[in-house]
Image 1 (cartoon, one colour):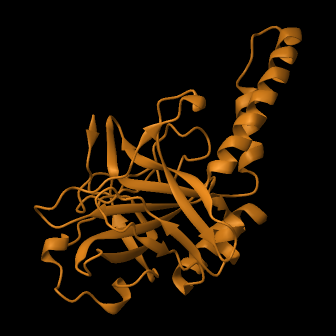
Image 2: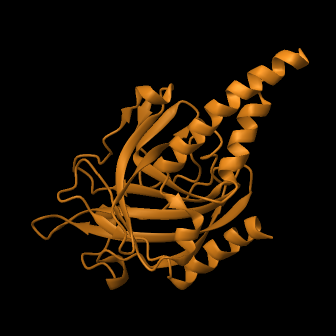
Length: 263
């Protein structure tokens, strides 16, 4: 079942199907209720306009479990080619065992075409995961094309959410080991052969997803600017938004997350 997640339900975890690298964030899936764009003021605050995100910490509590989590949140209203507001993009950052994931949730006013992303399946990946190509530029480096993934909850794919991963340094090694160690036959001699083949495959897989990630976590720690072109299907032109990694709120959160991997 493919569904569009409303602004009133905020995604807080990635789809579990993205192997080891994108097992994103808290076990509890929090829900948060915010005003719909239709009810937003006619003149949004200056910090919500323009391409640069300004972050604040927001606490979410799961209504059923009572578990709480706190993440950086950024909100941007997006203008169309005619200068009028055409929707919004809410960004949320999460610290996970694989680095920092950033999720974008798009929404529009009632009556407007529901936003989404140009999802497709890559046959070379050997799975049916839906992905979307996202152009990213870190500082003055060349543009990099990463793969974004929708939020998945049980059997629902939320096509108006897109997640990107900034991976921590040991994610590749752990992903490789997890794949290799999972291959056993019960026969020691044969296991040695199978693991050798699996390691080659794992190394190839790791390199592939590493190339398709948003970048290493060090980019999010050290960069001055990380611009993301979000390929929202109903937005014209496509919004180019700056994560503003040196924003005090986001930088503190990312630095603390990064410290977990460098101790």
